[in-house]
Amino acid sequence: MKKKFAYVILLVFAFLACKNQKPATQGYQGQGKSAVVSTLSKPVQKQWKGIWTFDEDATFFSNDFESGRLNGITSDGNNHYTALITAENTPVNVSPWYAFKVWSKTPKTITIKMTYQDSRSRYYPKISIDGENFTPLDSANFIGINKGTGDFGIKAVPEMVEIKVNISEEPTYITAQELYGSTRVKSWIDSLTTKDFISTYEIGKSRENRAMNLMEVSNGKHKKAVMVISRQHPPEVTGFLAMKSFIETLSGDSPKAQKFRENYDLFVVPLMNPDGVDNGNWRHNMGGIDLNRDWQDFNQPETKSVRDFLIGKESEGYEFVFGADFHSTWDDIYYPIDTTITGDKGEIVFDWINNITKRLPQKHTNVKPSTTIKPTMVSRNYFYVNHGMPAIVFELGDNTPRDFLKQKGQVAAEELMDLLDSQN
Image (cartoon, rainbow, N blue to C red):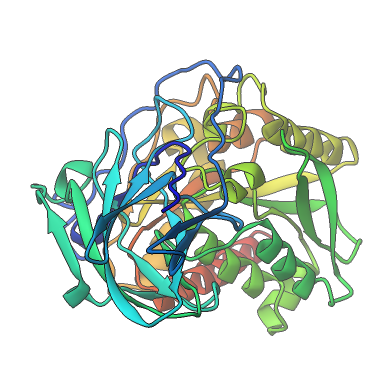
């Protein structure tokens, strides 16, 4: 038996933590004020990637693909295995990501115990055969160990989990969330650029020299624009999925979208952290830094790329009228800047939230405005302070139903188009 170990991740699993329709006084209250931290690069340990072989070369595990994360795997006998998951470096937010595939020369059922370093289990396992279409693991094949208490957050989820999976010669993917590595994201961008008003180009390079791809939706006739970014944090796939629907709606063929493009350009960086995503990190870039703390000092190349792009566009005469940064957390929540700071200019953000809520009353809307904007540090504050654009961090729950994510992205785009149209 061959055993190889790289280093371990965290896993966390919000499946018990999402309470979608609580009164505002009891709903998800979101994160507190972000601490000011240094964004100078720190060491990152890259995981070993390859294939583990067990049972006389009959059973195999692999993390060797984009977004793969498995730091070690041991065989405990009787088709029982223990997976080891750790983070890229510490301290780090508890968003433990895992993604691996397993197969066997003969069909059988195996049990995998998921263990984490200094964390509990957040993400409920997703299963796929092709690496693109995922379904949640059947709950009959899931056992939480040392179950947590409370409604939300890391304390509410199990310390470890055991899952049963049927495997065969065809690899089965087991992941924390759906896989959207840089190759798949670039394919999605390219699929939209078949339209003559959509183009894509690099605005910089990541720390590991991956492309920072930007998508531009423009007919070249105006100088007002909307800015959208996503995936600063690698595991936050639900935010990406809502953003994907949001962008597809803005760049679609509806009369409303066509009218929007008569007055506004749209700039999108769908994958802010390509290194972290492709390396299977669960928070940081390969400089060991949370990119959404680097919008003040710009020590990391990924944030510098967007900063330089925005400065360049403003020098061309662009006015940015709205900015959105899509993320994921324990439940859906909006983080706008309070109008005591932004005044009338920021009212569009709250009107937008209210209009989305009216269209989608089936899910409670959590809103947590911020009255602190300096140091800018996070993207939303930088967008407003340095570029004057009303901006928001738009967070989607880890377990928000995928069809609702798509609907919410579409509705959010439609309501934004209506509000911007009313300003013309």
